[in-house]
Image (cartoon, rainbow, N blue to C red; front, side, top):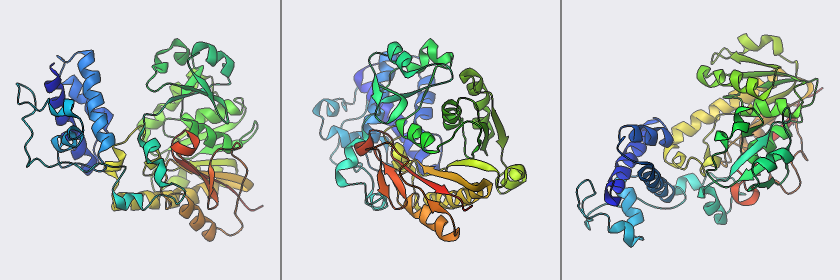
Amino acid sequence: MTPAARLQTAIEILDAIAASARDGGPPADALIAEAMRARRYAGSKDRRAIRALVYDAIRAVRSAPPSGRAAMLALADSDPELAALFDGSPYGPKPISDADPRAETGLAAPALIDLFDPLVGAGEGGAMLERAALDLRVNRLKATRDGLAKLFPEGEPIAGAPDGWRLPPETAAAQHPAYGEGLFEVQDAASQYAAAALDAAAGMRIVDLCAGGGGKTLAIASCTGDAADILACDTNRARLRQLAPRAERAGATRIETRLLDPGKEMDVLADWRGRADRVFVDAPCSGSGTWRRSPELRWRLTPSRLDRHLADQAKLIALGAELVAPGGKLLYAVCSIIAREGRAQVDEFLDRHPGWTADGGYLPAGIGRAAGRGFLLTPAHDRCDGFFLARLTAPC
């Protein structure tokens, strides 16, 4: 493909991504993969170049653009080499006109920035959109971090994460044979900090209420030496099915999975009511802390979608509280930097649940900043995804 043809393909993919963002459709990675399957003539260099163009535009443009062309023109205005590819050549984009609209660039729409936690300063925007490193978590059931360091000597330890090892962005670690053997998982440092903050131990009864594919469930199994009873739940059957083969690969043998029916969760969880030593509520959220990995999420968030997330979070933290034994602990977490999903959600829970208290001192030194009665992690301050977490103790 010519450079101009690559650019035109990127524009067409951006059209699809912008439409999907507005309609709540598939994510950018899925749409890029679909577009490449439809263009089998594109070689590996073409695919890499097209993907880079698409993500450069997504990171630069603050909200869903009117068109893929408008997004690319916003980049071309400051990049003469890119602008020169709008040359009207066969399979390339038509020449630039003064009448062509440009998408607006920046971190996010002002209304969205206004929702950020007060701790997120103006100087943090660059880190929120830079390419993320690849973080690994060693599986203690099968390996050690020293062993992981020998497998990936180009990496470095992750501060405050005893099982963490950090590699350069887009390292193909999951293709290493050690991954198939269950020696490690790919897991951002923020999730590793959250799993450790649960303070789980051998012999406990633990519920991961929003387990998804089980990344944090496996982290809990690892840190408890596969000596705790863990119940992993989710409402998404396809995601929950991923956990069993992952657990087998990791050597985690004490994980039970249960599919929940929205609105009828306690019908399935009645035997755990008031009996769990620890409950992890990693609630669905805006994903505003993960823009380094999924920058198109800035294009997807609307007031109505945020309201749905807030309602789900309030429901899940209350449901989780019903499962906690007297004196037990609940860890509430969201990969978000929006105050209403973090500190405000916890304040509202504590107002509705007299006797519950918020813990402190459960993060490594230098990691996170106090945000109300929880803690906020951000890419600039903590070199990890944006994350809010609060550990709450039930009354005895």
